[in-house]
Amino acid sequence: MARCAAGYERIIAVKRSLKALLVVLTGVALLGSACGDDDDAGSGDTAGSADTKITIGAQDFGESAILAEIYKQGLAAKGYKPTIQKLGGFRDLEIKAFESGTINFAPEYAASLLEFLNNKAGEAGSDIEANLKKLEPRLFGRAKLQALDASEAVDTNAFVVTKATAEKVGLETLSDLATKGKDLKLGGPADCETNPFCIPGLKNTYGLDLAPKFQALETGQVADALDAGSIDVALLFSTDGRIEAKDYVLLEDDKTMLAADNVVPVVTKDLAGDESLVDAVNAISAKLTTDDLIAMNKRFDIDKEDAAVIAKDFLAEADLL
Image 1 (cartoon, helix red, strand yellow):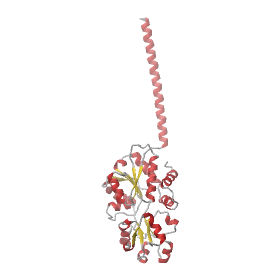
Image 2: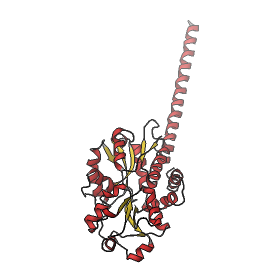
Image 3: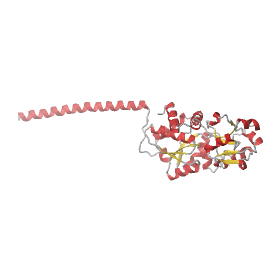
């Protein structure tokens, strides 16, 4: 009996030791977990899911390629694995790509997209918040799309002439163009004929019909045609770096035909439900300005730098990588 009692006491002692060890290990685990939480809170990073499919649509002009790279690389820095799908140059191809599921993300422009979706009803104005409010229901009606936060960066259509033409004809504003430039030849992308901020806008706001004198060109050919003298007035983007680099005269929109075309990311409903993704995209948009677009477009169009390199530099300078 004594031997059994001694054995029993040893068993009790072992159990007590194991219990004490378990308490110590539990405390260490809890301490490690708390330290890990502190590190995460300090970094401010949100981990994205590599399994989330993100396909960003990029239209065939430099700024769209740069913006697609900016959002792609910015999301990759948060743990996502986005890809870029190159699209044609017109918005209808982008919307069809959304509807077919080919893309689920695209950098867009608030006023122009609104006017595309409302069949050019003339709803877009100079107030970005009002434009977004009108845009939301129309987006949701097309493949259940949603707009995220708009950036401060604005890119509108820009009517430019060479300095020589401006001095010869006496052009400073679009009103001047309407009174003195009726015989001038306008060159721009093919959709200028139906774009409410191009030929229809000039006609409705300024009473100027340049349709008979319009030459449709590929986006990248417009500035070259202006330099060559085959057109007199070029439709470019207001953030085009060539305007300053080539000393073009930007005709003032003195009757405010052009609306608030802020850069705004558009995503599908599924992506909009990912809070970490939305936060990451909005953080990128919050750092984007019109001056940034002008500088980056110059690097792309004039200096012939790669869009991916330009985007990486922007993100690094904005502390988003």
